[in-house]
Every structure is written in structure tokens, then in C-alpha cells.
Amino acid sequence: MRARILGLLRESMPEPVSGEEISAKLGVSRTAVWKHIQSLKNTGYDIESVPKKGYILHKAPDLLSPEEIVAHLKTKWVGHHIHYTVRLEDSTNNVGKKLADGGCDDGLAVIAEEQTHGKGRLSRGWFSPMGYGIWCSIVLRPPFMPSEASKCTLLAAVAVIKAINKYKGVNARIKWPNDVLLEGKKMVGILTEMSAEFGKINYIVIGTGINTNVPKSMIPDELKELAISVADVAQEPIQRVQILADYLKNLEDLYETVLKDGFRPVLDEWRKYSDTIGQEVKVIAPEKTYFGTAVDIDEEGLLVVRKEDGTLEKVIAGDVSIRPAGAKGKRYS
Ligand code: BTN
Image (cartoon, rainbow, N blue to C red; front, side, top):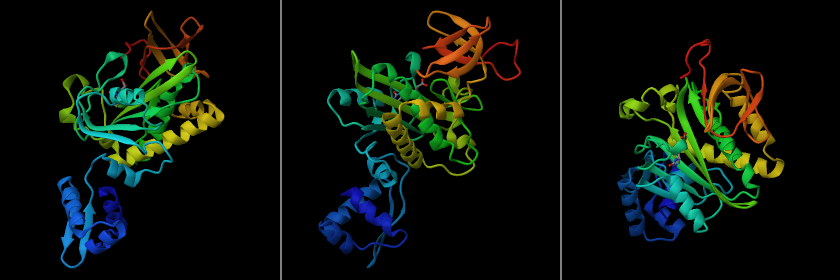
């Protein structure tokens, strides 16, 4: 009901809507309308009550609540079910996996304003402070083989970069496989987890952390030089909920492309945004460390590296660090 009332208020912005009109359109009493308006105000909606005229919505709060997302979402099915928590004492990926095990819908979005146990790749954590980023996990049930699943991380990276590069001044690039970087600093991290059986994916959970506006002063010392937010570089105001809605739309479009035409078009898009291809790299793989030049990603989404001895090596998992331009002979970061 709150969402429907908000819908009416939004439609008539900046004009008022009378309590009478709301109650007639939605089939509830005027007292019920009044109570919902009070509860919206308590959640942070700036709603003015104008005597004899009704209610005017001036401003919505900066929240990723289902009501706010629904008002911006343009998808057909991704994000149509939302599990929203203000302070999640867990990780959105863990919650997504539990809900997926319990049979939740394809396209469910798990969203938190803060997560206390944000997870990163390679057993690292992910700093996810209250209201300063987008901490979101999407459950998908793809029909393709488990061996294809890792490419969904590349797909998510393209989806997110298209959503944030819309802002003036933001020209983020993708570092293989899943870091979205600006000025060499991390703006977005993606962690894809999967439940599969032999030859069949039960589900995947694509967890995306977007630093939208994390204040520098809040960032833990050890991350200060490594992290950056969209708002640090954008030359126009950013809106978290709009970035999230755009990301979900891009994700749905790209995923549907994959279901129709396979991963090739997505890999082609990924190459356009890649900051890794053509760079000299140091690969820290689980078994060995080596140097070379990243030359491409293959059909499986693996990074192809020409090693210093001229042979090609495909990077399956591990950390790839890029040598800064002009730093030949110097140490890698
Ligand atoms: C990485 O770069 O190491 C991946 C970071 C992924 C962070 C996101 S935030 C939303 C989702 N929930 C998590 O616990 N992790 C992912």
C-alpha cells in the first residue's frame, strides 16, 4: 500500500494529491491513508500536508528500499522480488544462497544498506558501510552448464560499468575478471558464487559491491589508497537507486542476450571496457607467479597472457596485477 500511495504522490509531483483521491483510488479509508503517510514521513520521505489540498511529495530519502527501487526499475523480471535489510548482520551473498536453497524466484535481489560481513574474493572482506554504496546480490537460475558460470562475473562487470559510466566525469574500466577501477583504484567488486550438480547449475548468486559515495574519512586506513567512489569523480549528482536500477536493467538485457546468442556479444562488450588487455601483468596464480602481457580473453572468459618466454598461458584463477604504464623494469604494485 505504501508503494501505491507513493506512486500517486510521485505522479502528481509537485502538485498535491488529496487524501480523498488516494482513498478512492486505492480503496482504503482516509485514516489509513493518513497513517501510511505518517509512516512514510518516519522513513524519511519529505511529504508536506497542505490543508484542504492534500499531500505533496517533495523529496524521497536516499534508500534502496523496495519502494524506491520499484519506482525506478525498468526490468521485466530481475529485481521484481526484493529481500531488503537496513543493517544486515551477514553478507547479501549468503542470504541470497539461503533463499535460493529454499527455492526463491529467478532474479531475486538481496539488498542491504549495510552488511556487517561483506565478502570479497579470495576470502577477503568487503567494507560495506550504511547507505554509502550498493551492496546487492542477484539470484539467477541459468540453463547453461556450470563451466559457463564464471562468465556471469564478466557479464555483471559490463552491466555495472554501463550504469556508472553514464555519469559525467566517470570513465571506469574493467580489470580482469571483475574489478571495476578508476585511476587504478577499486570502485566495484563482484563475487559470483554457485550451487551446481554434475552438468547442471542449481543457481548462481552474483554479488556486487559498488562504492557510490563512501566518505574518505570512513575508509579503513589499509584501504584508503585502494578504494574510490563514483561520487569522488562524478561531475554531477549521483543517485544510488538510479545506479542500482540501471545495473539491474543492464544485467537483465545482457543475460537475455546470453540465453539467446551465447556469451560472445557480452565478451565483446567486456573487451571494450577492459583495462587489462594490452597491459604488462604479473599473475599470482595458486601454484605459481609469472610475468607477461595480457593479450585477450578467450571464449571461456579466461585471461590469455603471453609470458616473457613467448608462450601463452590462460589464467583460470588468481590475482593479476598490472604494471603501471611506463614502469618497465620497476616493481609491480
Ligand atoms: C571482490 O572484489 O573481492 C568482490 C567484492 C564483492 C562485494 C559484494 S557486496 C554485495 C555482495 N555481498 C557480499 O558479501 N559480497 C558481494
